Amino acid sequence: MPIEAGKITALVGPSGCGKSSFLSCLNRLTDLLPNTKVSGSIRLDSLEILDNTLDLIALRWRVGTIFQKPNPFPFSIWKNLAFPLQEHGIKNREQLDAIIETTLKDVGLWNEVKDRLKTSALSLSGGQKQRLCMARALVLQPEVLLLDEPCSALDPIASGVVEDLIASLRGHYTVVIVTHNLAQARRIGDYAALFWVQQTVGQLIEYGTIEQIFSDPQHPLTSAYVNGIRG
Image (cartoon, rainbow, N blue to C red; front, top):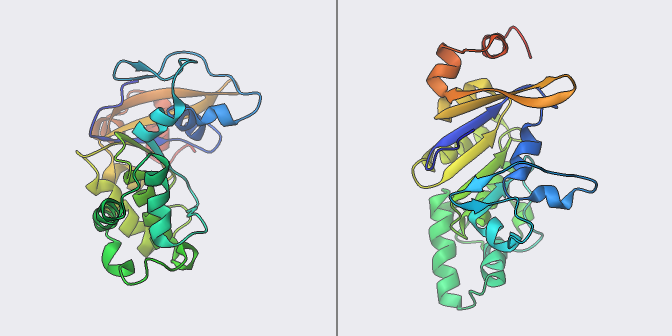
């Protein structure tokens, strides 16, 4: 399954079919799960992600993750973005301020929080927290952004704002998003992959452009799923 650079790939399918598990493989978050084994090959350009000698910190700098539930650190808004930068060696206050301001502008949050950067990130609304978490991932300028149902915990208005933000990342980042919302996948995706459980195992059923998956699916399961007959 190719994942095209600078494009948005949506992973769709019913619950429990392996979408989030697959996503976790892409930056080795599977290493944090006990009794978990991953085999095969996953490549980021020429880098073999499953190589046991791989520098995982460097990998996760290149491949960031946004989770279903917004999870800002219990720090100030400023510290949430400064923390990963400082962990990667950026200490100069002026440089930190400049990067943080630019990143908050990129996610459309700067005007909403610029006068309260020292207040707790936990005081933000759900949609603001999710955009802050996206900013926290983007502040390191990754090549790839993994999103695991980033809108499912948000109200429709906040979800729309985050969805528009994800769409705006096209061309700047390679985005892989897990979503149960087929309409959302069709709105923002360039490519889609259908996962399904067969013989108790989650499997990739079909991969293609958004237009092909929704208008001309090649597999009967894909056709049934996108037309609301199955799943």
